[in-house]
Length: 282
Image (cartoon, rainbow, N blue to C red; front, side, top):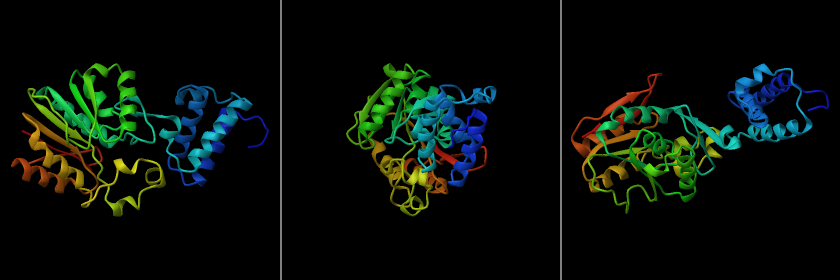
């Protein structure tokens, strides 16, 4: 960037072109989010301040973040925050970035929330699901094998005033977890479901930055569905199992659920018609 006067509008135009040339998707949105983050304002506020020049300090801070995004580091890891169900959450390199797919999972569980006293969030990550259910008054067990991920989940629970409803447990799925006897338990999980072949073809933002532990699964991506269902027999008064599923996995996961419970599983599609969630109510 030259020493000419850079306004918000001119720097955004330059940045969008720069990011697009680096192969970054949604270049305009990314440039706007990063600049709003540097300026401490909302992204839409930029449109009211197009003629405002940036200070040398602001330009230097913005350039540093822009270069990180150009290297294909995810926007959410750069800012340390992401949105889920219209709420802001902290994220880190130890947690997956929340996606719309998981909102379909949350919305599906919310439709039946009154049927369970306890929600067990298996693979809690940043705690987006645990917090979502806790804020609706449910007791939640948030399980994750990563202590670093659980630290982020605890911070999010505190930020959303949901700590008193969530118990955080470092565990490998359900192994060794003492689930209290209550009236109705839901098992909810967005487990790793990317097969090794699919993993190699992921975008750099995902493959090179998001935690491999939370993405990769063997057995054509079915490994963790199989393990969770094998462990589910230890849960007393189980009332439902809800899974987010990967591309083309819904049929296979539905069969796993039907074989386990002898009840036909239900499949939920997103607004684009893609199968995103498979669940069984007992």
